[in-house]
Image (cartoon, rainbow, N blue to C red; front, top):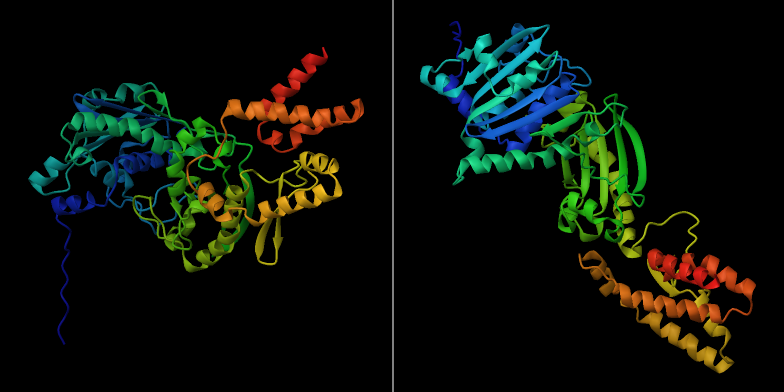
Length: 491
């Protein structure tokens, strides 16, 4: 019986690096991957700077820094693989992010690090690797390091790391003006960073992170609009998968009528809200993927306000299929079962927001013109006969007139254009009256209601309650101004 021969067959460096460059990083995801390393290194401030002549991008943090030996290890491809034990706060995964993210955008990567007063650096230069077809890692001396863009900022700190990108090719491939294209990419990446790291940029756990792009602070972009009082937390739940905690929290965003112009602009507009409904998967508070139902539900106009936060630890990476770029994931079957349980409830809550155009609260004090009720499997809308306008008018009618009035109300209820309203609410077009016309109508209606009050006591009661009666409750600013007019008239 023959003996099986063995040989060591390492990959050709130039071919291997060319393949790794094609993993599919965008400029945004590449920068985010570098920031992952900074956060894992304990950074509290990360400054991203760029220039276009000559073109470079520098990312400087105030993390722990690395010794020369540790830096060389960090520059090794696959240095810390996915099967090795990681700190629970580690945002890494494959040990490839620093190199693949950087070289997916440029041909020269230099990393300089400051620790315990010692400055060291290492560089991958693809031109040199391709020319020699060897894994040639260069180690610049201190004089050369100090001349690097961004190094002056690094030296202002007691410790930290500089990641420098130069010789751009793939980042601006196909662009007629590469320098202008790079400038646009660098400026626009701030929006991406504000979303991906929004939970680090806010003091959610008592300590926040600062990120800048050319000295401009990156603002947190909260996809759940938690600062808006009309955002609803629809429920939360904690489950365990393979002994590891998975946390879910469901949000229902406010209807467009309760979203400010600034909030809507940050969300990308009404159309963007439809595209970003669904699950928001976080790994150690870092947003991995968002705006997807993981094929468990189809996107719908009336579920566009539904968002479900899913928090997983890095110990479950192998189950969720998180890729090298940390931008896609695939929930395992046991997690999909959990996700299915919350989808239906949350989707229905989103539909209700469109149907009612308001946030429903327990013990709602508003007196509505239309009352909503469920009869068996159907939803029914009836005119509220106890509404002050209808009740007062009905009280002045004769018996015959009252019967005719009731038939009119019945006819209106039977002919309610429910389907048209449903489609209009799902559209982006607001259904509103002009402000001047609304103010005039409300003034006339208030005058009529007060004129029908038999005495001062009833009039005062009507004035005190009017802000909780439709249509006045739908126009609080106008109603407040009308009440002030009455107060001024009383003198």
